Length: 332
Image 1 (cartoon, rainbow, N blue to C red):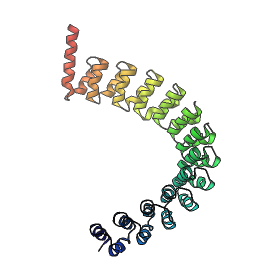
Image 2: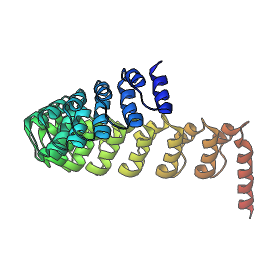
Image 3: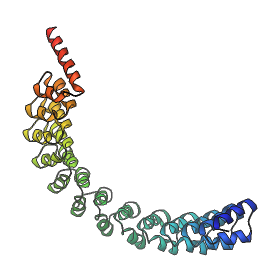
Image 4: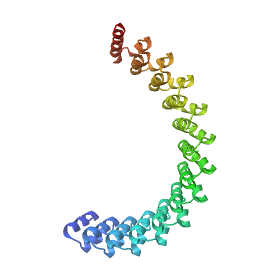
């Protein structure tokens, strides 16, 4: 009889030494047997459950409903289970569960925060194996900056920024330099920590078109050659830069957008040039939809280029109807 068959037999006919001995070859089935069939602890089901840390924890919390050395030892084979054993079964800190939890940075941080409710060298050292939990330890356990937690947090741009914002609560060369490894966090550092522009944060932000645009708009609060040129990789931000930062047309932004996107060339002509031009018209005529829209909303009349662009497409009929209506309006 296999494990599943023995368990099903016991569910139907009740517990027996025979089926119990079979299921005790597997931690999960041993735990389930104790919970669903015996509905009480047994030495052999507990021993089998303790071979696996998760089922050792479940056995202690749901079947024994009190701590024991064997279930605790089983749970301590896995850091997260050691933490939960301390939290849900022991209800207090112990050297063995803490030591086991300290094999994982997250569990070490959680143990310090929720069980010890205090900082310790061992839990801090363990948390400092990961920038995220070094930051959380400093923010929520130490509640103060330290060289060791800051140094580890600076291994990751996000947590370097968050450390500066929420732990140091001021700018520093080391956290700024670390944040500048990522355009987003260089921008956020300038916006929320430095609260002003700097060459290093601007240069880092300019590695991404969106953050170059955002830096110009929200931090510099005005145009610069470097931030403008950084947007040239993405037509959306070329357009937004011209609209919201330059606030007027320029030959360079128009040329850049005409080579990148029909949609944003059309929007540029509509909202920035606010009128037709040969170069924007030529660019949109690659697409009959935008050629028709250009004729209707920007030229506001016939042009050979837009007409040729819609010939033999679904927009030809619409174009002709638009022109007829224009002629009628002019007569009236």
